[in-house]
Length: 157
Image (tube, rainbow, N blue to C red):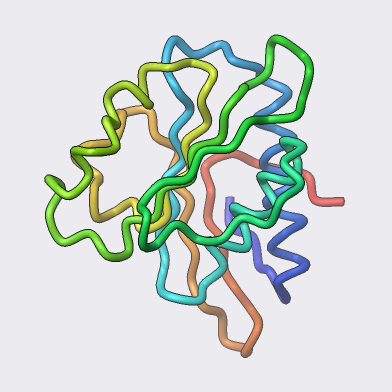
């Protein structure tokens, strides 16, 4: 599905719709849900993550974990069928996959209560689960326009 976003608020609506769709499915996986976010600098990845987190009931502002690599947040949704944790990973500074050893990603990806959103995921593609959902972000022709491509159709309100 290709969606054109005309502003950061439009990108937030797209992320909220995507999160709603994910939450409706519940935690039917036997492992974490991994979402790989790919795109140029300033193409909307962090804005997308922040809005996604709000749909999980996470109220605090989510700074990009560029220098700490990963931040964890607890979902505020009380339904036991939903995901419990949001892991936000930013691989912008990663040069070699070995730099992620301290994160113990294998354990993170095994937990079916985790949603893992990875910015710059293409840098660690070989380390990600095969069922990773890939979302591509591109700059559009206009200044604030972004093209977001995702495999899951969403309804934007």
